[in-house]
Amino acid sequence: MRAAVFHHSYEPLSIEDVPMPAVGAHDVKVKIQTCSICHTDMQFIDQGMAPNMKPPIILGHEIAGIVEETGSEVKKFMAGDRVILPATITCNHCLACKSWNETHCENIRRIGVDCNGGFAEYIVVPDFHPYRLPYEYSFEAGSLISNVLVGAYHVVFDRINIRAGENVVIFGSGGFGLSILQMAKLRDAKVTMVDIFDWKLEKALKLGANHVLNSNKVDICEEAIIDTVGGKPDIVIETIGAPRTLLQSMNALKKGGRLVLCGLTDNALPFLMGRIIGNEISLIGAAGAPRRKIPEIIHLLEDKKISLNNMVTKRYDLEHINEGINTLRMGQTIRTVIYPFGINNI
Ligand SMILES: [Zn+2]
Ligand SMILES: [Zn+2]
Image 1 (tube, protein in one colour):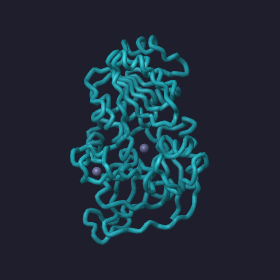
Image 2 (cartoon, rainbow, N blue to C red):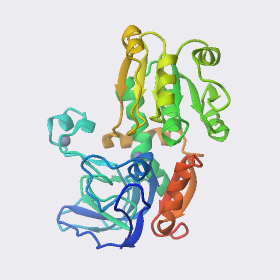
Image 3 (cartoon, helix red, strand yellow):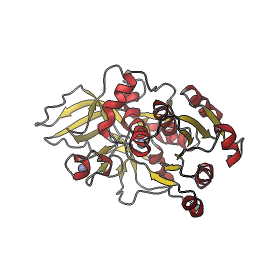
Image 4 (cartoon, protein in one colour):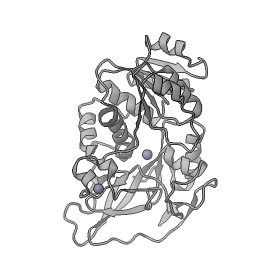
């Protein structure tokens, strides 16, 4: 099968023929229709690998597709089923999984990091892993549900538990930032989005942002935040992982505020210890995307409480994936989607 293979950081993915993965008795083989590109994928290429990554490996963890083949013992799925593949395979039997903390699973396998991912024509996963993708939703929607929407839900409801009326500032108006915005609005938070691109901030306003700030035009100092938000925010969510935005986040927060870090990075980040300690700021990390929340996301879409309009802005076939990754690198996209069998072939 064709796949985009990651061999080394600091070089483009290599489009090549690789062996078709074998299907075990309890496995499901999925023909991948869409796999969106996440910041994490780009980070492995541009900044370096995750500690236990063993290339060559196929990246990509935001996958939707059609069941092509099932193992002899599989009862839950059959060929032709439309499925979403969550980004992490959790074991369902460790203490963390049993206590509904599956993002802390002791046996977690991250698709596209610990095992091959979705920038390929096919993938094989255990039969307990896929979720059904209802017919009214596109494969693109499935890719967005699989990771970025579940991850945003996890940030807002599991990690921070935003309360009604709280003032929230989100740094970064990309796919993750816009998804967090939508989830925060479900809690009636007042949300201010910060980005360097006006066109992304316009999307944020369409999706319910109360205020927007372009940090290329306005110095994001305490005064600017207070003027725009009407006070110091209760919560700042940093989705970029850049030293400058982290400093701005710490400076903006009110005393006793919560600083939420979800911009994964290899940058050495400056922490203002005096301010964190003196202002009793709570630091909260958020990284997971619990797959058991996928049905909840589908309900929110059905009830039109969240929207996927405007989220996918670029599409590429597998052969042009490096151009697709470049759209992320240049900040030209909200979400870029890869179609392994071609954009017009599904
Ligand atoms: Zn992702
Ligand atoms: Zn587990």
